[in-house]
Image (cartoon, rainbow, N blue to C red; front, side):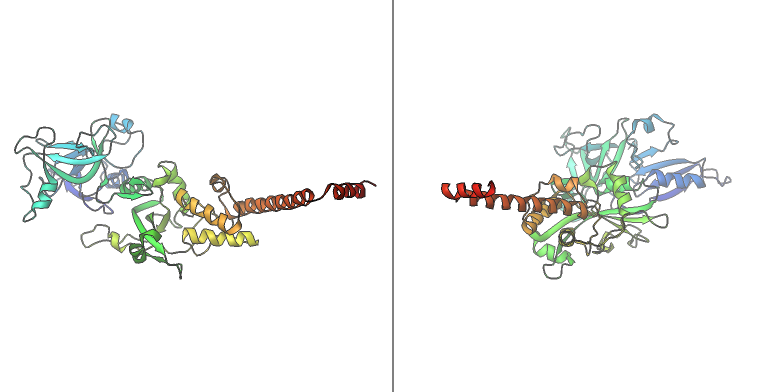
Length: 409
């Protein structure tokens, strides 16, 4: 399916030319969602919507799925996860759509794998590119018969319980962040379910912070990967004004996705940049600025020395210009790895040893500053007690007796 664009191509088909109403509407060339279908059905409520799937290396359409009426089919009931993507369906006659896992075996229901096409109508290969031909056009792993070939599409998918196939992104867009393999397309599909989101794209950006200026610098991350920080950035085009806040979008995603799939940064755009052929131009997406995200909590400046120093540490770790005392570390884009860095900085700066869970229990500057202040006070009291005990131990028996006599006349 290639690069994911903002809208699928829609083709209208009406065999009764005298009737101006569409009988069938075919969608192809991009990811189809329930929102797309709903908008088209407003214009043609009686039309049958069909999602078609194809690649350049095979016949124009190799798979199809007839979209049922919402909530009226066993398919809808089986997909209780309420995912938003319309399935690719099943192969047409003489076409098998296979999902192969990493072991080149057939994937189980719900298991993510690469979509491969088996059909006698495959292309012979790529002109003057034998390496790519051998990589993409493979022997059928289930028969190994001469001439029985399959084409690796590079699309990721999974079998649904009813036997249909669901698209789940591209393997060339798969990213690895903090040890987790992530499909940005899956995040986009879920984020697109938010009522206030019209279009969205999720990318992984690798940036670093310049040691002198503190500015984000993608090129320096390439030069020195030890200073880099790869993070998910969600670009959102809203359908309302004002747009939803970062906190609202983050909470929405946390209800449906694991924490490692929730973007660290949300950027609101008026429109997604497009290539001449109408696909999203990911290279033209702007780098996130260092301003504080649009949070529901109003910005409040620190009012104690500990809060001021701590807010500076947060800003440095999170690559932000400023942090308020009521800002939540995790709503600012913090995650477990950054939390570890923050606790390390707190230990070095304040000489206070705090467990990692302390940040999860006290995620604002104000709350964590109170914990640090309390620990410093307890530490100071313990040091004073230690000095007193050391002084007592240094006394001779006679000196101790005289001291007790002075205290008890």
